[in-house]
Amino acid sequence: MTDRLTTFRRGAYTFDVLDAGPLDGEPIVLLHGFPQRARSWDLVAPRLHARGFRTIAPDQRGYSPGARPTRRREYVQGELVADVLALFDDAGVEDAHVVGHDWGAAVAWTLAAHHPDRVRTLTALSVPHPGAFLQAMPRGQILRSWYMLAFQIPALPEKLLGRLMTARPDFGVRMGLPEPFASRIVPDVAEYGALPGALGWYRAMPIPDKRSTRRQVRVPTTYLWGDRDIALGRVGAQLSSGWVDAPYDFVVLPGADHWLPESRPDEVAAAILRRIESAIVR
Image 1 (tube, rainbow, N blue to C red):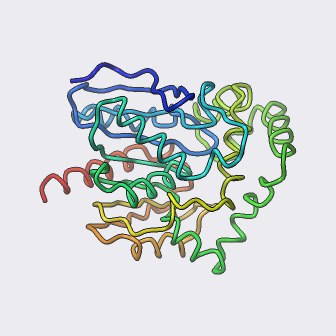
Image 2: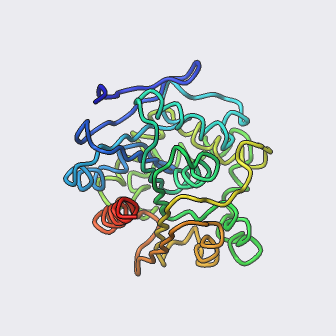
């Protein structure tokens, strides 16, 4: 049994962590997406605790006040994956079940592909395998991802988004988030100073990084996708199976949008538990 984590360190950076559930339970690492923090898992985590699992959810790079580098190269996938490995080490965890949503799913896919010895199972929400995402670009995904190009502009996006977030109290609702998560966007991201770092994830996308080259995943994997996700289409979702050489489940949630942990916590938790329990049985 280890101590409860509130922070972990990697080099000069300090990351905030929500660590809950039984300390002696098998660890599940929960990786949030954009533009949110670890509290995006607030409805999912208690369902996992009730089954005896410990959850460890960090505020990732750019979001934690002590880990906000300014150079875009500091946000390449290799750095984001290394942050998660440092979390494992500080928690005294050799390996863990890993769950990611949105950008957190991209990190989770890359972590599982490059460090299968550290990942017991993978559950990815909304975002497909990075290889499948690129394959889907000429087949309609590029039209859904137009904002990624806009985010490459220096300084302007955070200024405009920051003003928009603070000027419109219903910004989170317009994004499709249910309450109370919709109301957290402004205090948790814009007012918290996390927006420049959050956009750094997008700005690092064009930078080559050998530590995150696209590889097949060889750990038991479940991928959940909502068929009303306006940002991520069916093509990438379906192509992800070709990037997994291990037991794999593709779960389509009819009528679900992008915000699966917040709007479908029962189904998300059930899928995570099925994946974990299936791996234990094998």
